[in-house]
Length: 83
Figure 1 (cartoon, rainbow, N blue to C red):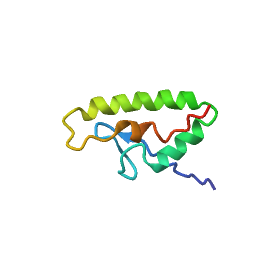
Figure 2: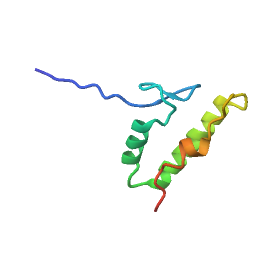
Figure 3: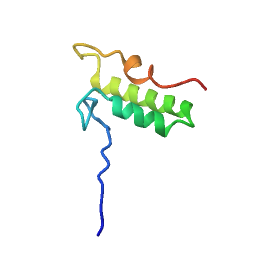
């Protein structure tokens, strides 16, 4: 008997930049935890990755967003950059 498990990844959905699973602004809490775990040994790479995603989101959401999110707080401030 084979048992399979489905891994649920909290990824962004463009162009809205909400999580595909929980519909919260991405990176949601689950995505943040996963990213911190994945990049634990390479925090500078995490910062580069998140910076890229932040600029992608800024381009997708554009200047016409009614309540502009604070992109730095959303994408970068929570990442552990103590290296």
